[in-house]
Image (cartoon, rainbow, N blue to C red; front, side, top):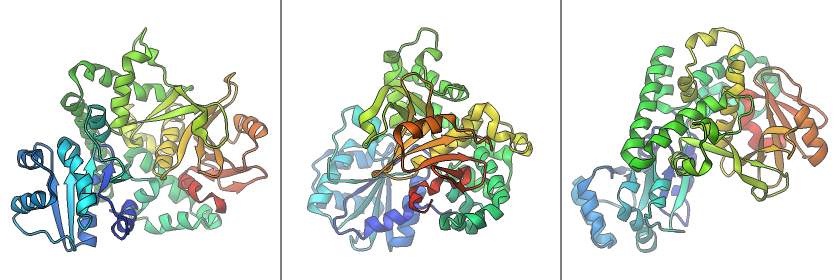
Length: 435
């Protein structure tokens, strides 16, 4: 299985000012596999240490954080010498031993010759609980479920993934049915690595659902294991409510729909917990369209999406038979799957500010508005080939963006002020100078 993030790890390895690297992401998005695979490809030796329930490592880092002492202790633990020139040190679930997290500062300052990559599923939660953090002494990489292009590569369609990257839309359109079929599969399977690998090998949708249910059950177990007891019920209620609210026509999240009479202050901690561990994406409303978009953010109004479109389908009970019903899959649940899919692809694009827009009267809503640094791009999402874009036209007439995108099942087409971009090519938004 190929992950595009591995290219960033090679860049990190060869950086002159290399710092210890922390890979963040929800559980089971492939952090451990990525680190080990990178170790195989880039180093002669790899030392892997999992800090979860590791008493020896907890005791080792509990004393002083002298680097020579720590390296000696790790060598005794793994049973061989560590050569800093050709060894990758992997610290998995590093948030479980806060002193190990603090030690990264001293590795960077006193022993930068060591190549250290860490992974954390709950780093944000650990920091909110008061864990000290080596600010400025580490680099970060966020890992998400497989994108659609990675899904193509993992399922034997590498050449179609390469064709998408080429942006030869005349050729892409000739093979659009291949992309549409693959996109249907992606909507159901999603991008969780274990699920994708199993689907690639077996093409069994029932087995896909079984694995997804197991992943969702493990998330529920994490709530009880890692969250304070008093907020666990609220985390569960909020988590189970996200999928039902995504099926509404108005996808703005309402706390009052979790339970009658609910207020924001009752669930703010639960929401913070779910966003910190990467299970929920919070997309805030903006009421303006100038750079930077964050200056126009409405913190009280937002939409919530889950970590993966396949898991969302599992949560709302999407049946495999839906795949056989033409394009009906894309309009099931009022376009919830399609909007979730687009959000998920946008999240994989590094440093992309993602919001949505409504005017004060609520008469104009743009599904996503992204800040690419130099320009603002509005994106209207259509689940099928319906190309009416009244809100997008209203937005254009008010803000005159350089590029406006409508993404749907229709073919690529560049009009005067509007670009029709197929859903299966939404990742190409990052290279919009060719669009």
